[in-house]
Length: 80
Length: 210
Image 1: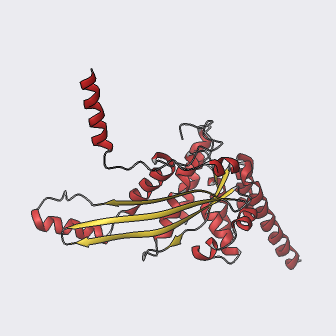
Image 2 (image 1 turned 45 degrees about the vertical axis):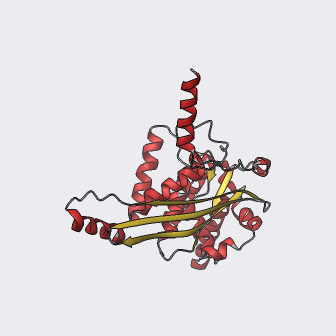
């Protein structure tokens, strides 16, 4: 999973550098890999990128982001 | 000139002779639905290989994206479905398309079933076979496109060494058959090159090189 994340990150980096549009779903896949390893802030930022690059992903990305934010909120509340 | 034409026609019929031209399918339902985005859900596995679904799922997004559609991220889709309690392809394929499409906000859902995925060993040759069934359903539940593809290959015996060499290379092919190129070829045939390809999607003209 770590290897997949590194590959994906390198590919996205190369695409962005050469000003090419990143293929559908790649930002989101990277976001999910981050989510699964507990980096929810990075997950949100990649889901946001997917949503602005591909408007078709809006419903899913918004749902995923809201889900994470709700969990972050709940975690904060249980701490305080 | 006439003779030349006749020879040309004969040559053409020789080339195409044994291929029966399948009837062009009615694509009016597809064009009425005009999907922009396609949700590829985890596959049904009817083969005996437990790894087949992951390989097949991984090979699907690229050709569909190349046809110009927004393809939902397959791993993220799998993750979301697991969060909803759906782990098996069979279970997911039984859900109404309308609710899957609504959950993800997709225009259409692609269902793929793996009918065959194996390597058969017969003394000195191994035949690797994959057979897939593809079904695209629009968000209102109408089936808008359907295909099936079976691909086979026999690895060439280039190890030399006569009979023993052939037996060894056949055994190697069976122990570690290379399914991915065959799977990718099947997808290319079905989505792009075949007689009933997926019509181009909205992103196709903008990004023709990909």
